[in-house]
Length: 315
Image: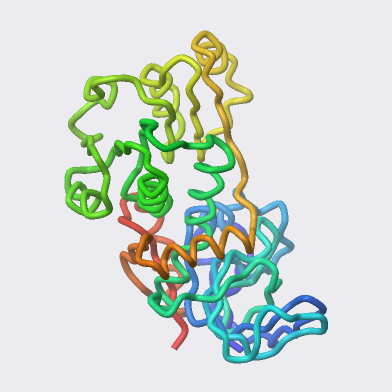
């Protein structure tokens, strides 16, 4: 089979299309003909030797978001049968070898693709959807009627977080460039702030209960000023445990500062699939690339200005 292999950490030039053996499923695993692969910022970070690089042994096949068809099953599998369309985030942060024509996945981490979703849309959902779901409902426990500020609201994780929070009954405010405001309004967002021309601190009429921060760094620090006393801040890209000033400022307002690592979860995937199947959740696919253009897909992600998700497809 064809697979994109990373020979050494570094730039996109280290990704190459190669012939490798088709993997075989073991107990609890299924072999999937990969139809589409979701590309995420962590893929690029890992390629550079950061992200999930510590769990890899080079040469390695990157990627975690998979949508495809079951072609074989190992012993003890009962959830799926041959021909089923399934999707999920495989084994993260360990190697899942998604950048290939076939991949072996744990059936417990995957769910059936609802008929309403294409393979491309399904592949775009797992890591971003799980990050939004676990961040909102397991980490900061967003509730009906609360005010939530989402930074990078039009991004891969952000646009899903907006929809999940609205489905929960929250009042959602998002930062995004003005080009993406109409898109976010279609998703049901209550207010948009143009981060290029407006300081979000000046635009909020009252404090928020929680912030879902997809930017990190200085944006996360600035967010403390708009959170009510006793509120919550989840910052995805940043780790503030080594930032005593940040923690001191948060402590003065009794703000919980959280960060977490997304994990595979078949139950969460089923919840996302149910919402998508009912038309309550959509995923934006900004562009698709063939497997041999994986380097180009990485370069698009690295611009930092992609609405929704980038997907690689197998013909």
